[in-house]
Amino acid sequence: MSHLNLSHFYRMILVIMILLLQACAAQDKSGPTMKVGMHIDAVLEFAMEYPLDWSKDRRVAYGSSNGEVRWTPQDNDNIMLRIVSQVLDEVPSKEDSLTLFISALEGLEITLEEELEDQHDLVLHLTGRTANQDIEAYLLQKGKRIYQLMLTTPPDTMDSYTGIMVRVSQSFQKL
Image (cartoon, rainbow, N blue to C red; front, side, top):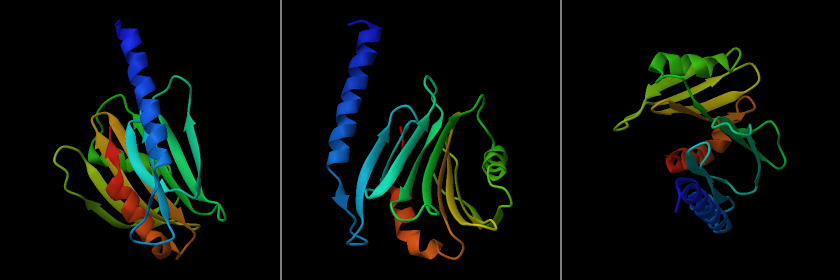
């Protein structure tokens, strides 16, 4: 089998696995009404659970390995779970990763910044707010790839969604 055919074969297997895993959504044990699905993204190189009844919007330019996936509840566009995955030209420092994140959020006031233990990669946990929203985020790095996992809610409503962010962040896997 040539390299091209083998690559195509692996992609087909991955697509089949994605379809099977998404069909096998499980019920959240921390909240009896929240069902979760598994999103596996070979292009953006991550897998994670997400609230199954939220709308999904995947944004990746053709031929690119950078992009994002967004989830919003059916009844509230002011709440968003978002993962941005980018490959940078060189391995970023902790400061560069933080600067990249903050530059995307105008007027961000950080209320918590902590570096979490990981055997090989950088993991930062942040909470903060802007004038219009509360934010909880994890910045993760694997080599030149950086991930921004973020939940945004209207001001003073983040506590209602803490269980979702805990579940999502614990399920996140870099591929």
